[in-house]
Length: 112
Image (cartoon, rainbow, N blue to C red; front, side, top):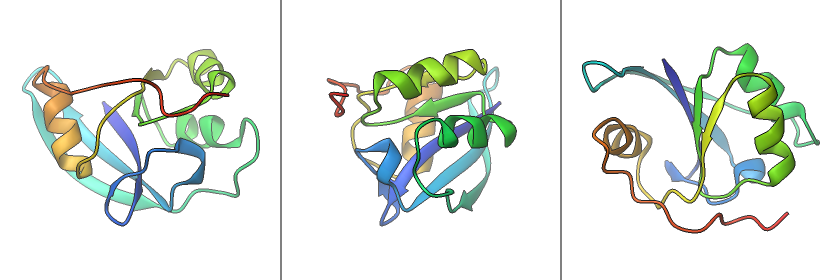
């Protein structure tokens, strides 16, 4: 599976639509291992663009600090799972925590 995590300055960006880059990590869910990571500069932020773009890149899960309800719905339409409310950390730390069932989440950092 491929996980996407929005980042700014190398760590989790709390607002999904305004990140500098997306870290895409190949993970082995069954083995709980994080593999290769690549960084991607997103297209300009417009409604519906990022979910479609990430789905086309083969992403199966997005872990974000905050994301609007409409973006979550569009991801769902593309068969992409979303986890919101993630706390800070590097993409590798976040992916490892998710795979290990130890990802700390709080409230969605977006209210739209």
